[in-house]
Amino acid sequence: MAASKQTLLSYENSTRPELLAAYFRRIREDSENLCSPLQIEDYGIQTMPSVSPPKWHLAHTSWFFETMLLKPYLANYREHHTKFAELFNSYYDTIGVYHPRPQRGLLSRPTVKEVYAYRAYIDEQMSQLLAHTHHKQWPEIVRRTIIGANHEQQHQELLLTDIKHIFAYNPLRPVYCEPGYCERPQPTTSAADMKWIAIEGGIKSIGFGGDGFAYDNEGPRHKVYLNDYALASRPVTNAEFIEFISDGGYERPDYWLSDAWQKTLQQRWKAPLYWEKRDGQWWTMTLSGMQPVDKHAPVCHVSYYEAAAYARWAGVRLPTESEWENAAASLPVEGNFRDNLLLQPMAAPSEESAPNEPMQMFGDVWEWTQSPYTPYPGYCAESGPLGEYNGKFMSSQMVLRGGSCATPLDHIRPTYRNFFYPDERWQFSGFRLAKDV
Image (cartoon, rainbow, N blue to C red):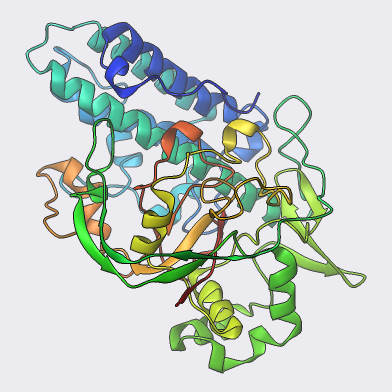
């Protein structure tokens, strides 16, 4: 199977040593399971600077545990390889130098076998550390282990998005979802009609403020004022986006932000990433290979620039992240996640039983908001290397919410803030509309 369907033990239980160790092992196994469909030649490919080779992801997540836990807290720890600290550090300037990100695909060594040996070594050393429950730094060991597990889950999603980009670059269009690893979704014949859900404004609270795990950028919880607004009941579909294309959406500069229009000209955008036309029909690359575009599924692999252009074409706008979170806060966290093993956005069911609530707020596609990724009032990044995890990126990026079909279910929550540059398209990103009322 491509990934475990087991959901996360409660945060409180995961602090119990035996359950914390089991949680750690399960996350580590998930990463290797996700690579099971790969051939040895797939592990070292890098198709653009934002994509990392699969073997780099496997090694970097191990480096994280080595650097953040084993070196500071396990007595007499010895590095597996002295150069791995440079090769697999991603961006932590407080730790030391690192290999340039655009050149990760130029490294034939260490071999895939050596990377898996590195993972096994780190797992064995971590099992020793997690047995030291009387360690004077045990609460911090627990905290960092949970951060490391969540960090690895982020890289599991990146593994899937990067594998898809690597396979799409290949004219053979390899198939990742071979039988036994994940399901091959069937095209849908209908989807729920898009409705406007009126949401009352006022003074609201957003941000994480409860028990359990959250990244530091999700807090502190704070007050915001929202005007009354309406939110689309579901994300924009492929059929609706095709209308935008057919109406000359990619040829009309008045729909586009200035930087966005220049990007469309430079990159020759004419459709979402991975789309191509064959005999008058749109096809797209999926992890199941090339498939006809499912017109009823949410549009996917579009940039913030494309989402904003569509919204302007439609005469409305994208939601702010505060509006999105306010609408999602009372909804159950359920949907089409990686656990379903579909690895592709699916249409909203037409027989939806809650017509007065937004659908598909979680799973299927990450949803662009119109909010820049900036710190919340009162945010303060912690000192040291973990302070570089989120805070240093609070510039020039846009917030996405809700998770996708490649996100583990136990990794998402209503307050989760994802962020990417506005021109990036290789993530499983879509959008829903909003408007003032």
